[in-house]
Amino acid sequence: MNDKNSMSVMEAIRTRKSVRSFLDKPVEEEKLNEVLEAARLAPSAKNLQEWRFVVVRDPETKKIFAGQASGQAQLAEASVVIAACAETDERMMKCGQKAYPIDVALALDHITLAAAALGLGTCWIGGIDGQIVKQVLGIPEDIQLVGVMCLGYPADPSPVEKSRLPLEKVVKYEHW
Figure (tube, rainbow, N blue to C red):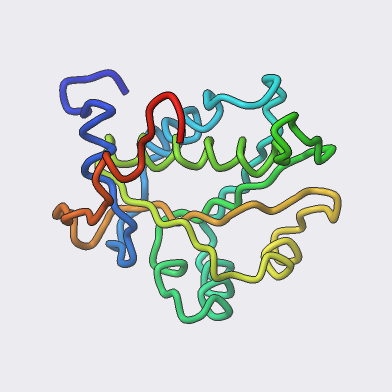
């Protein structure tokens, strides 16, 4: 969305937060498509674009997920839940890492930043049983589920102070 109401990438990075309570307000189709387009445009190893997404709006499905995910009510509250998957051959990169989890994580991060720029909130849910998600959504066994993300309007849109290590602690120049 290139309009005067959208924010810069750095503003989105500075203001995005994990949202754990959402308003009962649907995400407009245009905004949903914008965040999904951001994911589609993410970089991927060898440009294979192995990511696949299942968009869930059904209240009953979201309640099932919330009920088995360590009491994370935001799964039921969010307007949308996105199951981020990979259709992959589980190829290893030369650096020793599988490509698909990194590629899908990059796509999900694009979603978080696009969502923040559009006034939406997100929360990556790690405490959820992937087998239950795959079963409920009919995701084939050979498709890898990487993560589940809530998307919606935050109940509290105010920014939070981020506690991050100083740059000097996390960056080395030229060698360790």
